Length: 335
Image 1 (cartoon, rainbow, N blue to C red):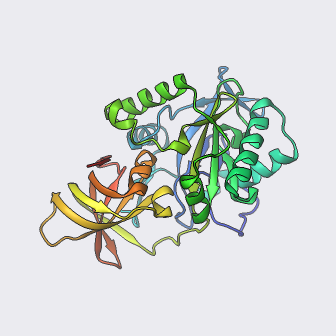
Image 2 (image 1 turned 90 degrees about the vertical axis):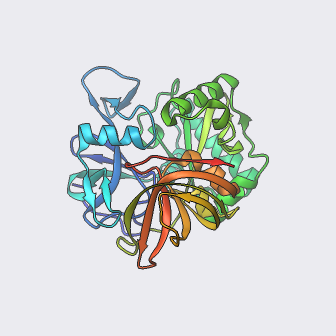
Image 3 (image 1 turned 135 degrees about the vertical axis):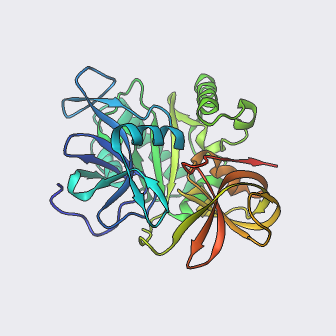
């Protein structure tokens, strides 16, 4: 167990946790039960060589693709998960008593700035400095996640995954036309679209319109991704969710909300045009998405077709549609 739990901030989305057996987890969102963290399992120790190594131990990636289907499969096979009474569904989970390390992206970037040990770490610093100069974001509001945060990167294979903290900072990235980075290499772009098509079951022609410009960047041939994270923890139990079953809807959502870019994405609904699966009179107030692929479409706003799970939210006693739930992964596609 870790010796102490830092109190200056709670566990935030994309923090990395390592258990006593060396298994590696990634935190999901900013709301967690008091006795542990909602987090999915990504790596486990391996007795055979792999492309990831940390502190003399090889790591095997068990989550080979993102998306709720892959996370659910790994959780069921290797983790178990728990039923969460607040979210009203089963979630991947690790208890504080099992955690030996809590790694935070913003701290890792500051350490790299003081000392870089390989080419990928140098690229990470270069990318952060370019973004800070081009967009005007303080380096204190940037972090690095993925294999670099873990210290298990392979400079030949690993991508760069930057974390951007804060609402204004997310909007600054989204609206900036020049991040100071290079376009993503064509072959990398083709690989990404093909992989997303397999993961989400959507045609490549549709997926090309769902990827935002800021996620199609690279530095010296290495793809650079962005994850937008709120600085604020969410108090566990403030909002309680209950599922009402699968729905499909055509509706209008607001545009330009930073919450649409963060995880989970939350976007206000302005008008419902049509809905299947709910009785008349159930007014949908928001779209909640745990699939980051759809965040850019929600951020742009306007008319969307959405499939997911209808939720009732207490104490508001209003309704939302969840995209990326285990019961129905769903989708968000522009009309």
